[in-house]
Length: 131
Image 1 (tube, rainbow, N blue to C red):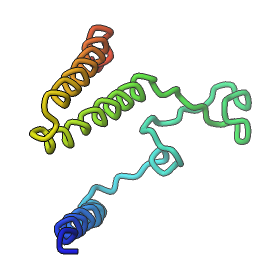
Image 2 (cartoon, one colour):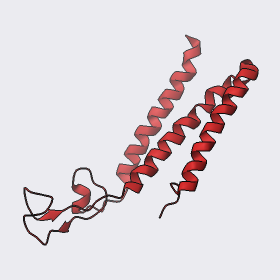
Image 3 (cartoon, one colour):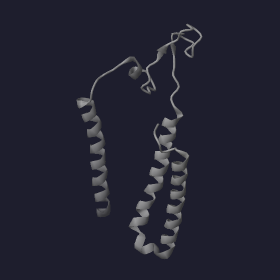
Image 4 (cartoon, helix red, strand yellow):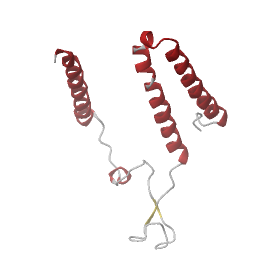
């Protein structure tokens, strides 16, 4: 049971940091509310009045039309998640590097090669430039 004490302490520290950060952000953070921020699924784009009246996207009220959110935002988020998760696989390899031997070295070299090919593909395609 003594082996789990450091993991428990680390978990408690992580929980305290998460709760403390959320509380601190709520206490010290700016409170500049507007209509768009108070709506559900806010994206930061202000809704604009619909010049056609009831023929807009919002059929119920007919007064507001929504702007489209650029797909580039979602693509960048997905790329971050994919590459972040792939890099997490390097941590267990680093811990067991000595015991894995040549097989572990070759497997990780192939893994890093695959990640590098995906990274180079995204770079050449322009997926990493924020325009």
